[in-house]
Length: 545
Ligand code: ARG
Image 1 (tube, helix red, strand yellow):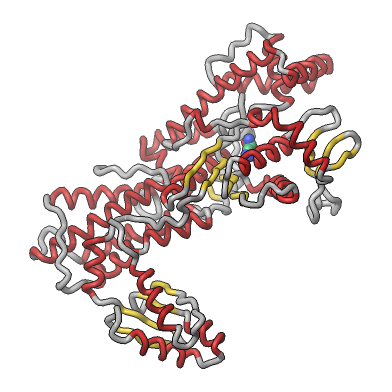
Image 2 (tube, protein in one colour):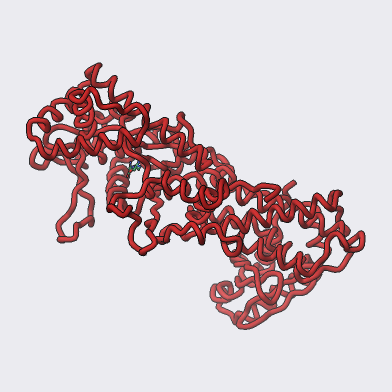
């Protein structure tokens, strides 16, 4: 069941009432309010439009609404309109409303590019954010009705693979099939030899060209490297409980066959140019710290393609496939790269009906408030963080890490602190899961389904909880629009606190039959909403804790 949220009803009535002053229409600007169920601020801009006094415009609107939907409507302050709904209408909402979400993105095809670790390297703390945020955005986009295409743009191509494959060829005893940590260790050794031995470096470069030319035996080793890595990534995804699967893998190499055509097209259109044998693209206004323009390097002088070329081919392909929106959930340090790629793609005419958005995020900090590193100064692996969380709190420890990541405003840095993340009090998943389990237990003890009587009185806590629950769909739609999962987390935290306040002051099991029926129905709605909200964030909602 999914009836219209109350704020939408209020909105429609206020818009209509404002027509009295502005016949061409004015926005209602409806908000929740401390002093009433809702507050409409639209009379102020409407008055400006009409060249009239805002309080008068508000008073006219109030008159037009008389006898309508509301229990009480009045002008307040400089021209705000305070609106109270009849208790009956609120109870009716409890009887009919579920945790539904408006289908604002129905018919939209949304690509989400996220996680994207690098082959032969372990996932590190930076990939935690892309993976958790990207997965939440995927759930959110689906909730508002979009068709979602998940793309895991893993780093599976480039000169480093020539180096690694050459090293493995020359050290045939080196065992690396056991898993990614072993592989990662060999990778580091290969880098060291490459830096120290010029002859090895030369052989590694030959290996790169063999790989790029498609030499079968070189490709065979490369494929194995990708397989071993992809298996490790999948284990981490399963551990994290995110929805990425092998079929979402679309690594950089996927676009190899498109690169020549893409570069030719861009050269023909005059968007890329030659510079000292390399092919580069300049974007208006993009300057480095020294004030000189910084180009996107598309092809190096030695003929090899880089990250820039791959992302150009990728964005072109996505637009051809009919993507309306492409979200790139990638570290804020890559902002320049994406501005360049998007600007070049736009000039090439590939973005007529496709909107790319870089969704950046802040850094995970260590206990010292600096970017998280091991004592030896190495980057911290994602699995070691998950180990720590699991040791502290078991499965819900991993949920707590995800929730802490998602509940922080996306662009902010945060400190990784398992103790704080798993606290029972405060804005943690543990608190939300506990609230959910508590509602489940009350409902189980009640042993009957809610049954609403619309005629009975309503307490202040009931009212607050109902208005909050009714707001869920709007919050999800706005969070999706802004690519901000933390808005859902914030909402759920407020909801859980309002549930606690409600339950503290309003007995359920011991209430008289009518109040009891209503309160059970209210709890059913709260339970569904908490569970749905947690699901959007990729967090489990256990019935018991
Ligand atoms: N593999 C890259 C990294 O670990 C991220 C790739 C992001 N996606 C993209 N289309 N460029 O930094």
